[in-house]
Amino acid sequence: MTKRIGILTSGGDCPGLNAVIRSVVKSATRRGWQVYGIPYGTQGLINLEQGRCTIEDFQLRDHGFDIPGLLRGVDILQFLSGSILGALNKGNPSDPDNAREILEGYRLLGLDALIALGGDGSLDIISDLAQRGHWNWIAIPKTIDNDIPFTEQALGFDTAVDTITRALYDLTFTAASHSRIIVAQVMGRDAGHLALRSGIAGGADVILIPELTPQITENVLDGICQQLVQLRQVDRQFALVVVAEGVHNHLGAKEKYIGDTLAQQIQAHAQRLCQAKSPTALINVCHLQDVETRATTLGHIQRSSVPSSLDRLIAAAFGCKAVDLIADEQYQQMVIWSHGQADSKPLDQVIPFIKQQHQAAVCPSPVTLGDPWVKTAQDLGIYIGEPVRLAETMMVTEQRNR
Image 1 (cartoon, helix red, strand yellow):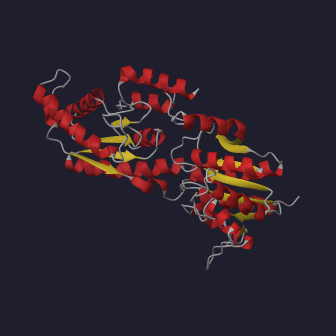
Image 2 (cartoon, helix red, strand yellow; image 1 turned 120 degrees about the vertical axis):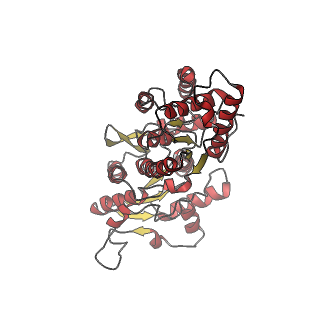
Image 3 (cartoon, rainbow, N blue to C red; image 1 turned 45 degrees about the vertical axis):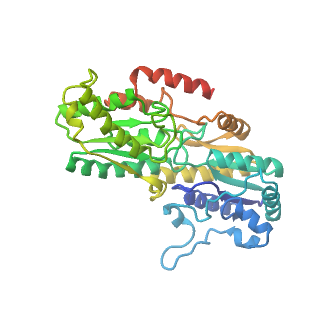
């Protein structure tokens, strides 16, 4: 049976979005279906309702992205970052006018089903719209933060880890050349997955993530300084510190550039320890007050780069799985990555949990104490927080997430 399906990318961009679009178009076209790409998320539906574009402008075809020369069709999309459809979302259903225009635009398209790529926030928004409009839809999780529940991995995460790891490699050698401590701030919102995995892969000596180190306390600074002293005792004159953007400052407040603050506090704390001749100051701690610290914020470059092979594989599997679910009329599902393959989870289990976490101001899928990468970091001797309080902190986090 021929179907008309739509696809949109909502929220921020990440590597692999175009690869999913390619997968959906190829899989659906083989079934004889029509695919419509909705530009700029739900804003595209508003534009359609307002007459700024036509339905024909939305149609995607297997041969619809021809490039002069040898390249033909949509296959080129798997290599491209960003989203050819755009990834804005201005359709908050709390605005009655926006909601009305979005629902009318969707009706005009006459879709049998919608595939929506988004993070936890945008999927929450689309779920509300889908309920109002009685849409048949499939969700595909995408975010470099990897903080969407019920899926082992979200689209875009693997590439972001690779991008940060390459940056840490470069920073290591400039740190070594000048005998400096370099603090690298990475994204992740309130989750530490990016910082933890890229820090391990990039050879970090210290990794601070919000789940294990909610804020930078005196004890945390003591731990960092002790780690740096231990490195100097084995003749390592430089160090690499990775801090996730979700870590709060010493006052418990969130800062846009927490990496800069941390770099300043490390140097100031070393000076205080030396001047006070603190018993917590190990031998050679006074040398740290002369060591330069530098901070760098990697920023939005983490959301770009050519999709990794794993993200392309996940994108291909996610797109095909979404089309299969629509073919079987198994709607209101989120495609997930589980045990090395694409599977699905009912949205009536996913969305309520996300809403609950948002209302509690808690990350929907944080790093847990049982995460094997936490143990790996500890076994490698990486400082990841206050050892005595790790279990207590994680226990509180896990209780709030139940």
